[in-house]
Each structure stands twice: as structure tokens, then as C-alpha cells.
Length: 289
Image 1 (spheres, rainbow, N blue to C red):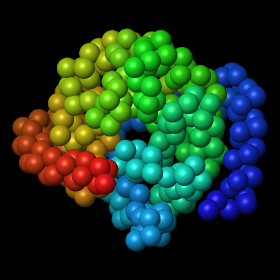
Image 2: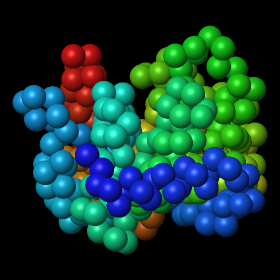
Image 3: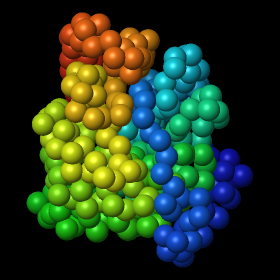
Image 4: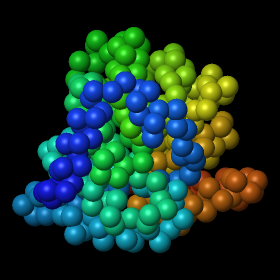
């Protein structure tokens, strides 16, 4: 579990974070971080007794660190965060920060069902090294999650977060799409830098890019299956589960796009669709267990 120094840092962060408004966070409020690039959503290894295998986590991060990723996402859907205790979630972030290259961004999934819990988790993750928070839509009471409710939730989290916030819409897992009108409103918040959209609807991605084009707001594709299409519509990168197994190829696709080699990029994208589908289906089977 978290050592005494880490817990001390977390407690101090909570004490400061929950008593200040957004203007009090000089390090987070208004700070626009460039999140463009490719990120693997790091998996959480478990032992045979269902405990987090921190040794394997660190081993995986050392291997992934050899690729030219922009950074890493921990505690995303591939990290199976709903199966972890709060202490385990923080320990995973702490261990990841220590194991990964210092020049890489660490985006930590801090979403919880309540706004208060999300704020506390976000502040805690910031205190132990997260550079940005990936906040999934609360969904247990999805029938009440109107645009107004979601705007209120994300605004409160961003107001109190010491690090930039990235919106996260993953309807396949939550049964809830973050409405485009809510995204447009939230894109105006100085501490919300972008979103990860895992809907697979490239028309929606293009519409979000179009409607937020005058804001400093960045969109990341949530899968390698529609990465190139998302790039074509204005996305700045992707958080792709396939990057955990085909990292070199995902980074190559990014390079081909950035250098205008569209024909080669298209050919590579075509080759990545089937393995991406296999990874997606594997994730769905595991998460159903």
C-alpha cells in the first residue's frame, strides 16, 4: 500500500484542494497542457490471488517506455479501475510515476460516481505525480445525467483540480455519451484541456473538433480502429489499447500522418483494424468475467 510519505502528501493535497477555489490553484487553473500524441492505456496486472501485481506493472511500463509515446494513461478502462480500491488506484499511479520515463505525461483516470469523490481522487493523484486527470462520465444514475448535470459535475472537478482535466466518454462501458453541447460548454473552462472520445463515431468527433475550434481544446481518439479517420477530422492523437501490443506501429501511423504520407498511413491503418478488433474483443471478455 502507499507509504507514509505518499499518504502524507495526499492528505496535505486534500486539505489544500478542498478548501480553495479554482483561482487558488496556480499550478493547474488555466494551464493548457499539450496532450497531442499516442498513449497506451496501461493494463493493471493481477496475481493469481486477485491482488495488484505492482512488479509486473513496473515491468510493463519499462517495456512501453522504449517506444516514442507522448505518455501513458493509467486507470483508464483497460486499467480496470472499477475493480480496485481507492488505495490501490493511488498506489498504481504512484508506482507508474516512478517507473515511467520522466519526460512522459502521466494521465491518471480519477473518475468516481460522485463529484466529491472525484475531486478527492483527482487531488490525491495530482499529489503523487499525475500530470492530468482523465475523468469518466458518472453513469450509475445515467437517466439523470443530463447535459446540465454533467456540466455541473465536470465544472466542480475542474475548479478544484490542481492538474488539467481531460473529459472521458466511453459509452460502451458506461451506456452514456457525453453530449456534444456539454462538451462545447466545458471546452471553455480554463482547466479542461480536451477529451478522449471512445464512441467510435467519427462524425461526432469531427463535430466536437469543429464546435471547439476556437478554444484551446484537444480531442483524442479512444481506439486505434478509427485513429486515422479521427486525425483527418482534427483529433490530435489517441489513447489506444492496441498500443500496448503494437506500440511501434501506432507511433509509425502518427509519424506518417504528421509528415503527410497519407497513402502509407491509410495502408497501415487498414492493417491495424483486425488486430485492434481482437484486442477490443479480448478486453470485453475479460471485463465481463
